[in-house]
Amino acid sequence: MRESPPVEEVHRYLDIGFEHLDDEDAEGSVRLLTLRAFEPFGLTWRTGTDPEDRERSFRSGIRAAELARGMGRSDLESAALDGAGSAIIDLGVYGQSRLLNLLERRLAIAEVTEDPWEASDIYAMCAWNRAMFGDYDESVRLGFAGRDFAAGQAVGLVGHCLNWAGVSLFHLGEWDRLLEVFEEIKTLMGERAEDPPYFMMVVFGAVAFVHDARGMPGASRLVDFLERSRGREHMGTMAASYWLAWILARRGEHEQAKAVIQDADAAGTKILQPFRDAVMADFLVVTERWQDISAFTNESRAYASDAQLRALPLYLDRLEGRASLAGGDVETGLESLERAISGFAGLGATWERARTELDKADALVRAGRTDDAAELVQAAGSDIERVGALIELERLRSLREQLG
Image 1 (spheres, rainbow, N blue to C red):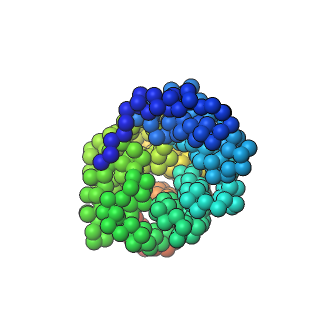
Image 2 (image 1 turned 90 degrees about the vertical axis):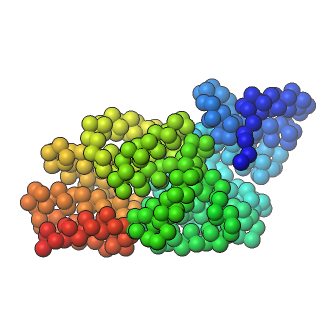
Protein backbone atom coordinates (compact mmCIF):
# COMPACT_ATOMS: atom_id res chain seq x y z
CA MET A 1 0.00 0.00 0.00
CA ARG A 2 1.27 3.46 -0.86
CA GLU A 3 2.06 5.69 2.10
CA SER A 4 1.09 9.35 2.17
CA PRO A 5 4.01 11.77 2.53
CA PRO A 6 4.26 13.84 5.71
CA VAL A 7 2.12 16.97 5.67
CA GLU A 8 5.14 19.18 6.32
CA GLU A 9 6.97 17.80 3.29
CA VAL A 10 4.07 18.51 0.97
CA HIS A 11 3.78 22.05 2.32
CA ARG A 12 7.49 22.59 1.73
CA TYR A 13 7.23 21.68 -1.94
CA LEU A 14 4.15 23.85 -2.42
CA ASP A 15 5.92 26.79 -0.82
CA ILE A 16 8.91 26.29 -3.12
CA GLY A 17 6.59 26.31 -6.11
CA PHE A 18 4.94 29.57 -5.07
CA GLU A 19 8.33 31.19 -4.38
CA HIS A 20 9.43 30.54 -7.98
CA LEU A 21 6.30 31.80 -9.73
CA ASP A 22 7.10 34.65 -12.11
CA ASP A 23 3.59 35.41 -13.28
CA GLU A 24 0.46 35.10 -11.12
CA ASP A 25 -1.67 34.78 -14.25
CA ALA A 26 0.32 31.87 -15.63
CA GLU A 27 -0.95 28.32 -15.88
CA GLY A 28 1.54 27.29 -13.22
CA SER A 29 -0.13 29.62 -10.74
CA VAL A 30 -3.54 28.10 -11.49
CA ARG A 31 -2.20 24.62 -10.91
CA LEU A 32 -0.44 25.52 -7.65
CA LEU A 33 -3.48 27.33 -6.30
CA THR A 34 -5.59 24.31 -7.21
CA LEU A 35 -3.21 22.02 -5.35
CA ARG A 36 -3.48 24.27 -2.30
CA ALA A 37 -7.27 24.07 -2.56
CA PHE A 38 -7.10 20.28 -2.34
CA GLU A 39 -5.04 20.29 0.89
CA PRO A 40 -7.91 19.73 3.38
CA PHE A 41 -9.40 16.85 1.39
CA GLY A 42 -6.21 15.14 0.35
CA LEU A 43 -3.81 15.97 3.14
CA THR A 44 -4.55 17.86 6.32
CA TRP A 45 -7.75 15.99 7.24
CA ARG A 46 -5.35 13.38 8.63
CA THR A 47 -4.02 15.84 11.18
CA GLY A 48 -6.92 18.24 11.49
CA THR A 49 -7.50 21.33 9.39
CA ASP A 50 -7.47 24.75 10.98
CA PRO A 51 -10.54 26.79 9.93
CA GLU A 52 -8.34 29.61 8.63
CA ASP A 53 -6.29 27.17 6.55
CA ARG A 54 -9.47 25.62 5.20
CA GLU A 55 -10.78 29.03 4.17
CA ARG A 56 -7.43 29.83 2.54
CA SER A 57 -7.67 26.61 0.56
CA PHE A 58 -11.23 27.39 -0.50
CA ARG A 59 -10.26 30.88 -1.63
CA SER A 60 -7.23 29.49 -3.46
CA GLY A 61 -9.54 27.27 -5.49
CA ILE A 62 -11.88 30.16 -6.29
CA ARG A 63 -8.93 32.34 -7.35
CA ALA A 64 -7.55 29.56 -9.53
CA ALA A 65 -10.94 29.15 -11.20
CA GLU A 66 -11.10 32.89 -11.94
CA LEU A 67 -7.65 32.84 -13.50
CA ALA A 68 -8.45 29.75 -15.54
CA ARG A 69 -11.67 31.29 -16.85
CA GLY A 70 -9.72 34.36 -17.92
CA MET A 71 -7.40 32.06 -19.89
CA GLY A 72 -10.32 30.30 -21.51
CA ARG A 73 -9.26 27.01 -19.90
CA SER A 74 -12.48 25.36 -18.80
CA ASP A 75 -10.58 22.18 -17.88
CA LEU A 76 -8.41 24.03 -15.38
CA GLU A 77 -11.42 26.02 -14.16
CA SER A 78 -13.34 22.84 -13.40
CA ALA A 79 -10.37 21.31 -11.59
CA ALA A 80 -10.00 24.48 -9.50
CA LEU A 81 -13.69 24.48 -8.63
CA ASP A 82 -13.32 20.83 -7.63
CA GLY A 83 -10.47 21.84 -5.36
CA ALA A 84 -12.52 24.62 -3.78
CA GLY A 85 -15.37 22.19 -3.15
CA SER A 86 -13.01 19.59 -1.72
CA ALA A 87 -11.77 22.14 0.81
CA ILE A 88 -15.18 22.13 2.51
CA ILE A 89 -16.67 18.76 1.57
CA ASP A 90 -15.23 16.97 4.60
CA LEU A 91 -17.46 19.26 6.68
CA GLY A 92 -20.38 17.39 5.10
CA VAL A 93 -22.09 20.61 3.99
CA TYR A 94 -23.76 19.00 0.99
CA GLY A 95 -26.71 21.37 0.81
CA GLN A 96 -24.96 24.66 1.52
CA SER A 97 -25.23 27.22 -1.25
CA ARG A 98 -21.52 27.82 -1.79
CA LEU A 99 -20.88 24.13 -2.43
CA LEU A 100 -23.96 23.85 -4.65
CA ASN A 101 -22.84 26.89 -6.61
CA LEU A 102 -19.49 25.25 -7.33
CA LEU A 103 -21.22 22.10 -8.56
CA GLU A 104 -23.61 24.08 -10.76
CA ARG A 105 -20.65 25.87 -12.32
CA ARG A 106 -18.94 22.55 -12.96
CA LEU A 107 -22.09 21.06 -14.51
CA ALA A 108 -22.21 23.98 -16.93
CA ILE A 109 -18.61 23.16 -17.90
CA ALA A 110 -19.50 19.47 -18.35
CA GLU A 111 -21.95 20.44 -21.05
CA VAL A 112 -19.29 22.15 -23.18
CA THR A 113 -15.93 20.63 -22.29
CA GLU A 114 -14.17 18.32 -24.71
CA ASP A 115 -12.31 16.57 -21.89
CA PRO A 116 -14.19 13.30 -21.16
CA TRP A 117 -12.28 12.71 -17.92
CA GLU A 118 -13.18 16.09 -16.50
CA ALA A 119 -16.80 15.86 -17.59
CA SER A 120 -17.18 12.37 -16.11
CA ASP A 121 -15.66 13.49 -12.82
CA ILE A 122 -18.11 16.38 -12.71
CA TYR A 123 -21.07 14.02 -13.06
CA ALA A 124 -19.63 11.69 -10.43
CA MET A 125 -19.07 14.47 -7.90
CA CYS A 126 -22.56 15.87 -8.46
CA ALA A 127 -24.06 12.39 -8.05
CA TRP A 128 -22.07 12.03 -4.80
CA ASN A 129 -23.42 15.32 -3.49
CA ARG A 130 -27.02 14.44 -4.33
CA ALA A 131 -26.70 11.01 -2.69
CA MET A 132 -25.50 12.52 0.60
CA PHE A 133 -28.02 15.36 0.41
CA GLY A 134 -30.94 12.99 -0.15
CA ASP A 135 -31.93 13.79 -3.73
CA TYR A 136 -31.66 10.15 -4.79
CA ASP A 137 -33.42 10.29 -8.15
CA GLU A 138 -31.13 13.10 -9.30
CA SER A 139 -28.09 11.21 -8.03
CA VAL A 140 -29.08 8.21 -10.14
CA ARG A 141 -29.66 10.40 -13.18
CA LEU A 142 -26.30 12.13 -12.84
CA GLY A 143 -24.46 8.91 -12.10
CA PHE A 144 -25.86 7.17 -15.19
CA ALA A 145 -25.25 10.27 -17.31
CA GLY A 146 -21.62 10.24 -16.19
CA ARG A 147 -21.38 6.51 -16.88
CA ASP A 148 -22.69 6.99 -20.40
CA PHE A 149 -20.36 9.91 -21.04
CA ALA A 150 -17.31 8.09 -19.68
CA ALA A 151 -17.89 4.80 -21.48
CA GLY A 152 -15.23 4.35 -24.14
CA GLN A 153 -13.64 7.72 -23.37
CA ALA A 154 -12.83 7.79 -19.65
CA VAL A 155 -13.40 4.21 -18.54
CA GLY A 156 -11.61 4.78 -15.26
CA LEU A 157 -14.42 7.06 -14.12
CA VAL A 158 -17.34 4.77 -14.99
CA GLY A 159 -17.08 3.06 -11.60
CA HIS A 160 -16.96 6.38 -9.73
CA CYS A 161 -20.22 7.41 -11.40
CA LEU A 162 -21.90 4.05 -10.81
CA ASN A 163 -20.79 4.03 -7.18
CA TRP A 164 -23.14 6.90 -6.35
CA ALA A 165 -25.93 5.84 -8.69
CA GLY A 166 -25.83 2.42 -7.03
CA VAL A 167 -26.01 3.64 -3.45
CA SER A 168 -28.87 5.97 -4.37
CA LEU A 169 -30.73 3.01 -5.86
CA PHE A 170 -30.28 1.34 -2.48
CA HIS A 171 -31.91 4.29 -0.72
CA LEU A 172 -34.72 4.32 -3.27
CA GLY A 173 -35.46 0.69 -2.40
CA GLU A 174 -34.41 -0.43 -5.90
CA TRP A 175 -32.22 -3.24 -4.61
CA ASP A 176 -32.50 -5.46 -7.68
CA ARG A 177 -31.35 -2.58 -9.88
CA LEU A 178 -28.48 -1.98 -7.47
CA LEU A 179 -27.36 -5.58 -7.91
CA GLU A 180 -27.55 -5.17 -11.70
CA VAL A 181 -25.34 -2.08 -11.45
CA PHE A 182 -22.94 -4.01 -9.25
CA GLU A 183 -22.60 -6.72 -11.89
CA GLU A 184 -21.72 -3.99 -14.38
CA ILE A 185 -19.13 -2.66 -11.94
CA LYS A 186 -17.57 -6.08 -11.43
CA THR A 187 -17.35 -6.67 -15.17
CA LEU A 188 -15.73 -3.29 -15.63
CA MET A 189 -13.22 -3.79 -12.82
CA GLY A 190 -12.28 -7.39 -13.57
CA GLU A 191 -9.73 -8.68 -11.06
CA ARG A 192 -9.67 -5.26 -9.40
CA ALA A 193 -13.14 -6.04 -8.01
CA GLU A 194 -11.36 -8.16 -5.39
CA ASP A 195 -9.42 -5.10 -4.23
CA PRO A 196 -11.49 -2.04 -5.24
CA PRO A 197 -10.26 1.55 -4.93
CA TYR A 198 -11.37 3.39 -1.82
CA PHE A 199 -13.93 5.54 -3.63
CA MET A 200 -15.92 2.41 -4.60
CA MET A 201 -16.48 1.20 -1.05
CA VAL A 202 -19.83 2.95 -0.73
CA VAL A 203 -21.51 0.74 -3.33
CA PHE A 204 -19.62 -2.36 -2.15
CA GLY A 205 -21.02 -1.71 1.33
CA ALA A 206 -24.55 -1.29 0.00
CA VAL A 207 -24.32 -4.59 -1.87
CA ALA A 208 -22.97 -6.38 1.21
CA PHE A 209 -25.92 -5.00 3.19
CA VAL A 210 -28.42 -6.24 0.60
CA HIS A 211 -26.90 -9.71 0.51
CA ASP A 212 -26.92 -9.95 4.30
CA ALA A 213 -30.41 -8.47 4.73
CA ARG A 214 -31.83 -10.93 2.20
CA GLY A 215 -29.84 -13.89 3.52
CA MET A 216 -28.30 -14.41 0.07
CA PRO A 217 -25.50 -16.90 -0.63
CA GLY A 218 -22.13 -15.22 -0.39
CA ALA A 219 -23.26 -12.64 2.16
CA SER A 220 -20.64 -13.70 4.69
CA ARG A 221 -17.85 -13.28 2.16
CA LEU A 222 -18.95 -9.71 1.40
CA VAL A 223 -19.32 -8.85 5.08
CA ASP A 224 -15.86 -10.28 5.79
CA PHE A 225 -14.57 -8.06 2.99
CA LEU A 226 -16.00 -4.99 4.75
CA GLU A 227 -14.31 -6.10 7.97
CA ARG A 228 -10.94 -6.31 6.21
CA SER A 229 -11.49 -2.95 4.52
CA ARG A 230 -12.75 -0.91 7.43
CA GLY A 231 -10.79 1.73 9.28
CA ARG A 232 -10.29 5.48 9.35
CA GLU A 233 -7.62 6.09 6.75
CA HIS A 234 -9.90 7.68 4.15
CA MET A 235 -13.49 7.87 2.98
CA GLY A 236 -13.51 4.33 1.61
CA THR A 237 -12.49 2.57 4.79
CA MET A 238 -14.94 4.71 6.77
CA ALA A 239 -17.73 3.75 4.34
CA ALA A 240 -16.90 0.09 4.90
CA SER A 241 -17.07 0.70 8.65
CA TYR A 242 -20.49 2.33 8.69
CA TRP A 243 -22.05 -0.29 6.38
CA LEU A 244 -20.51 -3.03 8.50
CA ALA A 245 -21.82 -1.46 11.70
CA TRP A 246 -25.34 -1.31 10.29
CA ILE A 247 -25.17 -4.98 9.31
CA LEU A 248 -23.83 -5.99 12.72
CA ALA A 249 -26.49 -3.98 14.54
CA ARG A 250 -29.26 -5.70 12.59
CA ARG A 251 -27.66 -9.07 13.36
CA GLY A 252 -27.74 -8.28 17.08
CA GLU A 253 -23.95 -7.93 17.41
CA HIS A 254 -24.36 -4.63 19.18
CA GLU A 255 -21.06 -4.18 20.99
CA GLN A 256 -19.09 -4.93 17.84
CA ALA A 257 -21.24 -2.49 15.88
CA LYS A 258 -20.61 0.22 18.46
CA ALA A 259 -16.86 -0.39 18.36
CA VAL A 260 -16.80 -0.18 14.56
CA ILE A 261 -18.68 3.14 14.59
CA GLN A 262 -16.40 4.60 17.24
CA ASP A 263 -13.31 3.57 15.32
CA ALA A 264 -14.53 5.21 12.11
CA ASP A 265 -15.64 8.34 14.01
CA ALA A 266 -12.08 8.80 15.23
CA ALA A 267 -11.11 10.01 11.74
CA GLY A 268 -12.68 13.34 12.66
CA THR A 269 -14.32 14.14 9.31
CA LYS A 270 -17.98 14.63 8.41
CA ILE A 271 -17.57 13.58 4.80
CA LEU A 272 -19.96 10.65 5.33
CA GLN A 273 -21.86 12.18 8.25
CA PRO A 274 -25.32 12.05 6.60
CA PHE A 275 -25.01 8.29 6.18
CA ARG A 276 -23.22 7.79 9.50
CA ASP A 277 -26.02 9.51 11.42
CA ALA A 278 -28.69 7.49 9.58
CA VAL A 279 -26.88 4.32 10.65
CA MET A 280 -26.54 5.64 14.20
CA ALA A 281 -30.29 6.33 14.34
CA ASP A 282 -31.00 2.67 13.59
CA PHE A 283 -28.31 1.53 16.01
CA LEU A 284 -29.88 3.47 18.89
CA VAL A 285 -33.25 1.82 18.23
CA VAL A 286 -32.10 -1.79 17.92
CA THR A 287 -29.98 -1.40 21.06
CA GLU A 288 -32.80 0.47 22.86
CA ARG A 289 -30.42 3.20 24.02
CA TRP A 290 -33.34 5.55 24.62
CA GLN A 291 -31.36 7.62 27.14
CA ASP A 292 -28.85 8.64 24.42
CA ILE A 293 -31.35 9.72 21.79
CA SER A 294 -32.01 13.30 22.88
CA ALA A 295 -28.34 14.29 22.87
CA PHE A 296 -27.76 12.55 19.55
CA THR A 297 -30.76 14.08 17.77
CA ASN A 298 -29.96 17.57 19.06
CA GLU A 299 -26.43 17.37 17.69
CA SER A 300 -27.46 15.66 14.45
CA ARG A 301 -30.29 18.13 13.78
CA ALA A 302 -27.90 21.05 14.27
CA TYR A 303 -25.52 19.48 11.75
CA ALA A 304 -28.31 18.68 9.27
CA SER A 305 -29.59 22.26 9.50
CA ASP A 306 -26.12 23.72 8.94
CA ALA A 307 -25.50 21.37 6.01
CA GLN A 308 -29.06 21.97 4.73
CA LEU A 309 -29.67 18.25 4.20
CA ARG A 310 -32.92 16.81 2.94
CA ALA A 311 -32.86 13.15 4.04
CA LEU A 312 -31.15 13.06 7.43
CA PRO A 313 -33.90 14.96 9.33
CA LEU A 314 -36.35 12.20 8.33
CA TYR A 315 -34.22 9.51 9.96
CA LEU A 316 -34.21 11.68 13.07
CA ASP A 317 -38.00 12.09 12.93
CA ARG A 318 -38.37 8.33 12.83
CA LEU A 319 -35.89 7.85 15.66
CA GLU A 320 -37.72 10.35 17.86
CA GLY A 321 -41.03 8.71 16.99
CA ARG A 322 -39.76 5.30 18.00
CA ALA A 323 -38.34 6.76 21.22
CA SER A 324 -41.63 8.48 22.08
CA LEU A 325 -43.51 5.22 21.58
CA ALA A 326 -41.02 3.37 23.77
CA GLY A 327 -41.59 6.00 26.45
CA GLY A 328 -45.38 5.64 26.27
CA ASP A 329 -46.13 8.91 24.44
CA VAL A 330 -48.16 7.37 21.65
CA GLU A 331 -49.57 10.47 19.99
CA THR A 332 -46.23 12.27 19.80
CA GLY A 333 -44.65 9.10 18.48
CA LEU A 334 -47.29 8.67 15.79
CA GLU A 335 -46.92 12.29 14.70
CA SER A 336 -43.14 11.93 14.35
CA LEU A 337 -43.49 8.70 12.40
CA GLU A 338 -46.02 10.29 10.07
CA ARG A 339 -43.57 13.13 9.32
CA ALA A 340 -40.94 10.54 8.47
CA ILE A 341 -43.34 8.55 6.29
CA SER A 342 -44.38 11.63 4.36
CA GLY A 343 -40.79 12.79 4.00
CA PHE A 344 -39.46 9.44 2.80
CA ALA A 345 -42.31 9.25 0.31
CA GLY A 346 -41.28 12.65 -1.01
CA LEU A 347 -37.74 11.37 -1.55
CA GLY A 348 -38.94 8.23 -3.27
CA ALA A 349 -37.21 6.21 -0.53
CA THR A 350 -39.72 3.36 -0.70
CA TRP A 351 -38.07 0.91 1.69
CA GLU A 352 -37.51 3.52 4.38
CA ARG A 353 -41.08 4.74 3.96
CA ALA A 354 -42.49 1.21 4.11
CA ARG A 355 -40.56 0.10 7.17
CA THR A 356 -41.57 3.31 8.93
CA GLU A 357 -45.16 2.45 8.06
CA LEU A 358 -44.59 -0.87 9.83
CA ASP A 359 -43.40 1.05 12.90
CA LYS A 360 -46.55 3.12 12.90
CA ALA A 361 -48.80 0.13 12.19
CA ASP A 362 -47.30 -1.76 15.12
CA ALA A 363 -48.01 1.19 17.43
CA LEU A 364 -51.57 1.45 16.13
CA VAL A 365 -52.18 -2.26 16.74
CA ARG A 366 -51.02 -1.89 20.33
CA ALA A 367 -53.32 1.13 20.67
CA GLY A 368 -56.28 -0.89 19.40
CA ARG A 369 -56.62 1.08 16.16
CA THR A 370 -56.57 -1.95 13.91
CA ASP A 371 -58.36 -0.42 10.92
CA ASP A 372 -55.75 2.33 10.61
CA ALA A 373 -52.99 -0.22 11.12
CA ALA A 374 -54.37 -2.44 8.35
CA GLU A 375 -54.25 0.45 5.88
CA LEU A 376 -50.59 1.05 6.66
CA VAL A 377 -49.68 -2.62 6.39
CA GLN A 378 -51.42 -2.72 3.02
CA ALA A 379 -49.48 0.35 1.88
CA ALA A 380 -46.14 -1.06 3.03
CA GLY A 381 -46.56 -4.61 1.82
CA SER A 382 -45.50 -4.47 -1.83
CA ASP A 383 -42.37 -2.41 -1.15
CA ILE A 384 -41.30 -4.59 1.77
CA GLU A 385 -41.75 -7.70 -0.38
CA ARG A 386 -39.95 -6.18 -3.36
CA VAL A 387 -36.89 -5.31 -1.27
CA GLY A 388 -36.87 -8.71 0.40
CA ALA A 389 -35.07 -7.84 3.66
CA LEU A 390 -35.80 -10.74 6.03
CA ILE A 391 -36.28 -8.68 9.21
CA GLU A 392 -38.90 -6.46 7.61
CA LEU A 393 -40.58 -9.41 5.87
CA GLU A 394 -40.99 -11.09 9.25
CA ARG A 395 -42.43 -7.90 10.74
CA LEU A 396 -44.86 -7.69 7.84
CA ARG A 397 -45.92 -11.31 8.29
CA SER A 398 -46.42 -10.84 12.04
CA LEU A 399 -48.56 -7.72 11.59
CA ARG A 400 -50.69 -9.42 8.96
CA GLU A 401 -51.27 -12.31 11.35
CA GLN A 402 -52.27 -9.97 14.17
CA LEU A 403 -54.67 -8.13 11.90
CA GLY A 404 -56.20 -11.33 10.58
